[in-house]
Image (tube, rainbow over all chains, first blue to last red; front, side, top):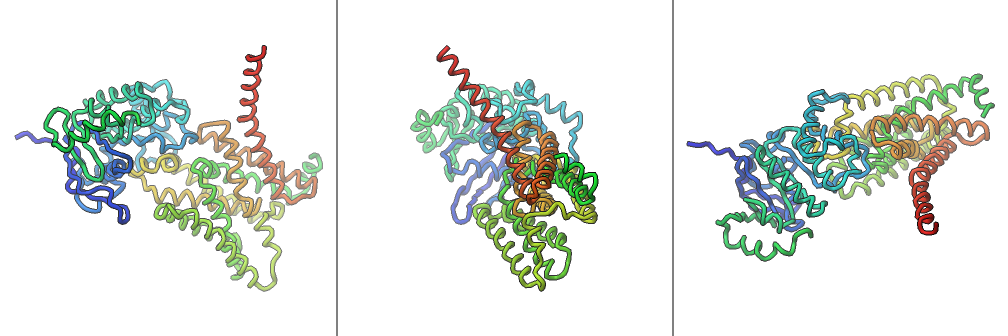
Length: 243
Length: 285
């Protein structure tokens, strides 16, 4: 019998902030090597779901397993790419320093990184095509370059699961295309889950799509999507792109 | 200026003052950078003012006010750290409350202390000319603690200041690190009280680091530049106050503000004016 490795398993997960229900009874399985895009409106719970997967929030009900472990224990297997807008533009930090943060561990004391850390950081920057920007201040990079830097930071810790929060929200369509191409290439080695409100692009480019607005609906562009999910997708895909 | 430097060679109290300037520059140059990049000026101001409560209680109990200041500063740092991480929405209200309550407690205890002391003024507005040798040693020890902690946790502080969510994912103890950082700021506040007084602490904590931030985008370099600048502000303020017979703390703060405005004008206004000039020349050759 072939053992199929599961990257993510959600079993009836619910989460509420105070008495406001954000996520209701989510069940989901993501196999290792998959590429899942989760789309949905702002406030639909996308970022909350990512936080649950990273273990920085605990579900009110239900169970989450990342590679068969609770999220907190699986943290070292996860690479995370936040929305670039949450980071302070004026912060005095270079692209290289941001990437090196991915090599940091709780026992990394005193200022210096090891030679191996630098080697890995430069390798990751080469992999995403920003090796010439190492000494540029992060805040001075373009939207696409920032996104690549953050992806490099996530890659440098050798993750098996890559989580991305709105990777194309602050870039123009041509750059978004490049970033999706880069992710498709990276997907040969890591499982990728991204959240986005960019429905149109996601509908045409991904094997697996889920729609999240408090509840989760799975949709497979290839065929067997359930009736309700094809409805919303057919209706809204033309409207939302770039919005 | 000549008279100041002649007096400096002659008088012990001026030498002590300059030494106190060096020691406090180290503290505010290093932790001030964190205050500026993490944008926690208001929290730092809250800690600085709450400290008066501890000073008042220490007076009342007949203890060393510096000890009272240090304990209250650390207590406020832990309290505000916990509040920041649990009740984020009401953080500014709570800081404001702590700010005022600390001062109120201090004033009440000072009033209750028999034989009202004029020293209150030196805590509010600082008096670098009254620094004695034991105080210098205390400042030196506080500096040592601050520099050591920053050296050990340098990379972790950087990540916590920059991106808390990612720091959590990397398994860093974000809460502990944040409270530790606030504790360092609290210790710096205690040091600076001797120099500029608790009301003006914020100026030395933020202005040198802000000026440094205009000229470099590397954190360690920013710390070095901020340290040098704060010493420059303190020394020039001290000399000027000696020459013109003005209060030293206030003069130091004025020097720091002038430095900040000049740097801001140089880095932001000058390029703007130049651009205007070239556009004008292009349009009307």
